[in-house]
Image: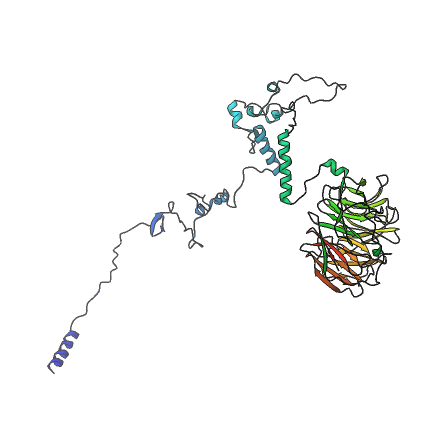
Length: 563
């Protein structure tokens, strides 16, 4: 209780105390400062003339207004090493940079090349001429741009006639043959052909032979030997004991044993002899007891089909690969064209070259006229079809309406007309012997046709199109038959042969994967597909007498016989 009493007594005493009075006068501890003409920059008062509002490099916006003088002030100070292009943005005007002079590109190039070659150029400001330092060092500062032709060459680049030792210019005499009056330094030198020594010649022959053996190639023949043509017979004798030639067909293989053809199923023989790929094959007309092949190694070989199945003769006359071959009606002659730009006419039995035409012209296809066997038509690379007479060696006609290289030539309508195809994606029909074309087929949906042939009954003309299909036209008027389109193989970029069976029931073609495709003519469906070669199957032929025997060739250098 005593504590409570004391507490109450102390409160009463506090209420009796007087309140504290505060002074009403404002007191400032800061000294008096005159801020007139000063600006606050980074917490410091600076005169307006010295105030610089420097922004951070990463600043995206300005938080206060800058004076106009600082907004358009020139760039000063070091540049960032990655922003050297900022020099191109130096402004001498509020809207950008103004050049001192305006020059067109032609005038600038003219003055630039004049300065580089003659040592002077016009001052773009109109102040006269700007001279090269070599001219200034030589003391030649008096000539004008108009005198450049006479004295505008720098001393280091001048070559006067005195240094060359040339004499005074002589008057022109029409009776004197023309000759250079100023001889070049190399004019007096003559190239001297250094002949190989006997030891060097022996070494080069040995080196070339070893190189050919390593690469699996035969040594190249000389140009003279290739021009004359050589042949090698590989059989036992060119004639038998009765005097019959090795080309005579066996008696048991002169007529067909059945009326219908059947599909091949198995491999029965492989011919290998070409060192490079085989481009084309043809059976001997009528009997098919021999097979002629054209190789990319420059050789044509003929093989026995029914006997020992060996190579009978090799024809060497092309220095480069052989592109196409074609037999005469009796098979006693054949014509070949190669990448050496020559067409050669051969004797099949002896292997001799009868004649050579179209030298210097690359021909992609050759065809002998079925009735006039001394006439050959060649589709060339220079957009023309050339007609040659093999008896005289003269070109008698040219058909030149195509716009690209000619790929095929095929006779139709009882040999009175022929059809040609080209890389210009057109098909043209010609009257034989007349330069004007009889029919012209072109369509934006068409593709180039690389190989063509006719059916055995001469009713249809088929072509290997570049869009991976075989197209069909009537052989008399060349009307398209869209129902007879054969698809399923891939031949884009390759001129794969198309062949018929002799009963016209089947159509076959090669493939870029080495497959052989056989279609049924009536249904246009694939009835057989076989993997025959490792590389592109470029050629195929149905035997003219056998019912199911087919020969194929490829760029792997092999020829295969199927049954």
